[in-house]
Length: 394
Ligand SMILES: *Cc1c(COP(=O)(O)O)cnc(C)c1O
Image 1 (tube, helix red, strand yellow):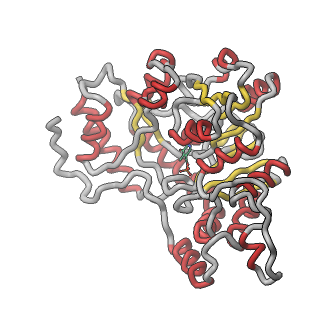
Image 2 (cartoon, rainbow, N blue to C red; image 1 turned 30 degrees about the vertical axis):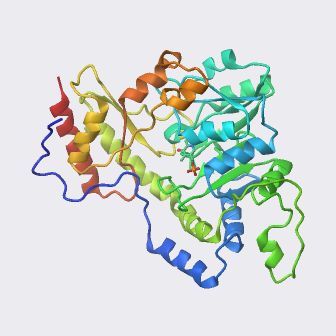
């Protein structure tokens, strides 16, 4: 494509998903370095406590990723070989991979065309005697229909484990995501609403599950390192399960502790940007995200548009390349998993099996959405999208 960028294009490349690192995180990490307690210690404990208070759940276990959190949430509840777990194909591969790592089989159910969340009405047809759990993803930070999912889980005696990697601030009908299902898994990866570099958290109200996740996350030992080496004297550990090395470090927790108090202010800023984009894109051949469902709080993690390919003479990838030439970084969330070679082959999936997820995969484009963006950055994004849309118009 021979797209020639505007002579007014912004001078610096706008990196998609760049974290908002402030002096607070820098000082917090420095203090951990100076304390010499780099691994799992007092900061992790504080972060778990602060996260519990924020979510309003009984237990929060910090781990080194959301992928690890999903893996252990399923293992702790007994998901394993021979089981099936129902999930959405419109997600990051980690969701399905965590299922596969337990030995269970992911069963994909198409999404709703508007919310892009798993469509509860299509789930019952996918339930079999082997189904053990539902694993919905709150896509882009929009809470799933938890009433419908909860009713299905109850009726068929399934676990409800949520992938809330996008949804740390989300609320469903007055209940925070993290307090609704049996277990909820959060991500603190670099690009997420709350970042610790790498990091994750499982929340649950079930004491046994929490204890098992904690133990599985550190080699299956019954006393963690913090307890063993503290000033209360040396304590022997006992290994009761061949666990994993999934623990969070104090270095990571220190970053997270600084962000919990500003999460809502950051979300408010993303709401402003969201509204600005939606207002500016009216009349362009793009579909903007549908408004959040009533009685929910949308965590506003991603602003995804769908290109109207009937009105454009270019593909989504060409549209993205042109935005890149304008120095605007974008993302794709997602190419649906059934279109990736591994899942297509292993689970015998065709594009036509998931018409909505296939449609979205071809057209979706995520624009920068972060409290880090200045008004000028947002204006640059809008100007570039308008120019590229005009260039790509039929
Ligand atoms: C980022 C992400 C994950 C994985 O999170 P990690 O913390 O990187 O393991 C899982 N699911 C979704 C939907 C994600 O966006």
